[in-house]
Amino acid sequence: MWLVTLADLALLLLGFIVLVLAHQGNQRAIAAGLRDRFGGKAAPAAPATPPGAALTPDPAVLPLAAASLLDFAPASAALPDDAAPLVDWARRQARDPRVRLTVTGLTDGSPADIDPLSQSAPLLAADRARMVAARLVKAGVDGRQIAIATQISPGRRGALVTAGFAGDRQ
Image (cartoon, rainbow, N blue to C red; front, side, top):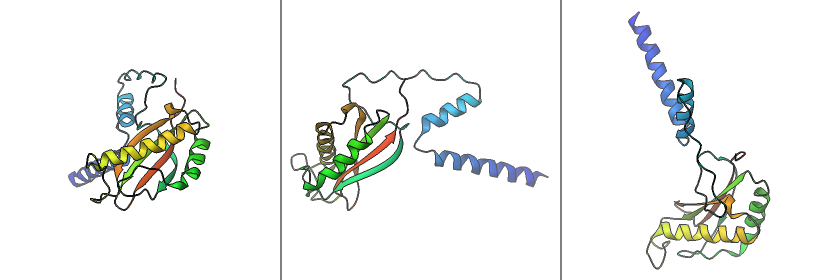
């Protein structure tokens, strides 16, 4: 009898671990769900982003599509000549005001792919993301729909733009 109870406990623990790992990137939703199921009160909603303020990557945004611009020169944030398809794609995605674009600047992690002045790969990645974001804004994308992130990705020098559904903002 005790063996069956132990097996049930082990399966319950395994299920909880799978649940946590499956939703690792969305801790707020897990906490809200657990709070709701145990009768807790919901946390107050965050204030809306004021017009003109920069957006930060929102873990509640559901990524739907992605496009990339690769082949940046090492240690350079200058946009490659073939940026037009990415800009057109992003402009089409951003027609819906509920869409948020996250521009992630990428460096390849090599010693040659760093910012020449600061000797920093994350700063070079941020510069690449800012260059792409500036081109998107110049092409008509609302700057409030754009968030910037950085990543060191072996073998990749470029920028990745993801379009995610942020839902209706109230």
